[in-house]
Length: 219
Ligand code: PRP
Ligand code: URA
Image 1 (cartoon, rainbow, N blue to C red):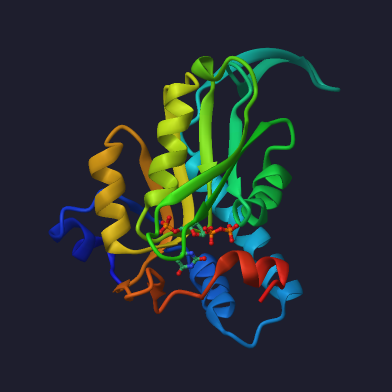
Image 2: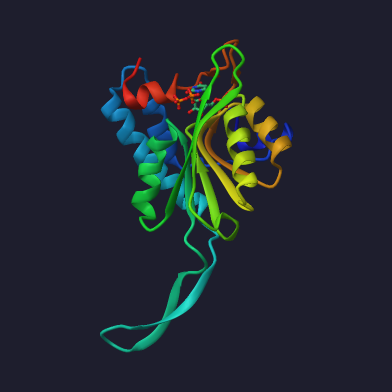
């Protein structure tokens, strides 16, 4: 697994969240003996922590408030409600945790699967909230492997009007980070780990296997 200085040397633009709790929980998730129940719970908990990182610089505005002691002004989030976009299906495992932290967020879904032979992303569903151009859009998917899925989802969202986007994942491959940086240099990536490489089947090594199967118990 790569650290932030190695990523810099390789010219990869990505924010690595190396908080000890994130790293600890991620190691538990990698363990193939975890049940789907535990895997889902850990993904939800890590998503809380990743949500803090990806929203760290959200703009605030002052609002009047009357406390039991006196009237004052205090900060609240400004602008239109942000949108979480879940890349189906595995994105839903992160969405739950994101919504725990920001329950008022809007939600959209982009349905994509990887063709097992070509590794190209195939779209089967698209539904997003109105006024995408005025909202911060946070796209979630646990895995960034070849990045074909993330690149396709972000391209589709741009066609649909999104202008201000961030991408959050759990584990990425260096090949995927590079491809995503080249395709969408305006969209930042937040990740809990950048692993060593992709294998010949496009799986992240060491990774955690197929995220969707592990979340939903479909293997
Ligand atoms: C997984 C994962 C990503 C994609 C990553 O989804 O959740 O969406 O693969 O691979 P890529 O970077 O090479 O495109 P999958 O296609 O297995 O679908 P699923 O979520 O329905 O299981
Ligand atoms: N999708 C996954 O779920 N896992 C990988 O390692 C690669 C793509």
